[in-house]
Image 1 (cartoon, rainbow, N blue to C red):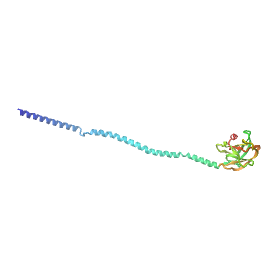
Image 2: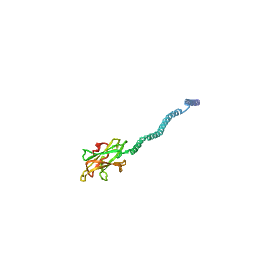
Image 3: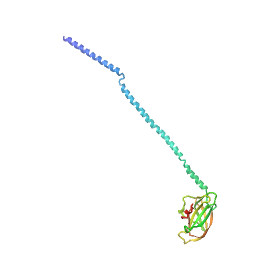
Image 4: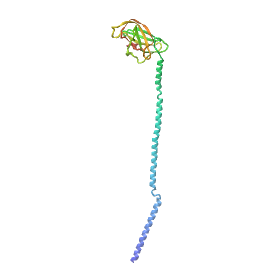
Length: 242
């Protein structure tokens, strides 16, 4: 009886093991049939993420390269515009042309002006010198009149404070004015003068131009050695300030 029971137990155990083996195989086959790719879902997730990254990176690269190139060209254009902006430099050149015109402009001399010396009541001890353009075109009265009383060899000194800001230009019929201070502080060496010679300064300020104009002075014109004359002025009142 014991032998039969033992065999029966062994047979039952074998049947149980066989059943478990068959069940495990069926479960494995079912799992394989449901997911044949294995880890395919993880790969798909990984491949989707980088797909967005290159798009952003490429856009950044393009934005960086384009401005650098165009920026250089833009600077070049700016430089070119700046070059054309120097056109006003012709205005300076035109100023040079103006200087050339000044060089060809007539200088006021005894040949194209009438010069008169007259007494004035104010200021005292002064004469007024008037030079009127009698020519047919404008002339320039440069600097100050060069004066010589009677037989004096050196010209009368200038009143430097009277230097005008610009050259006095005279259209035909217009006049320039200069005041003559007859007496300075020292009157011990004074004398009565009768003749006044007036010469005109050239554009370059050296020497004189043209022949001197000889004028008869008003009676009893008393002068001293430190007499002085102002620069030519365009207004009589400006001249008589000195």
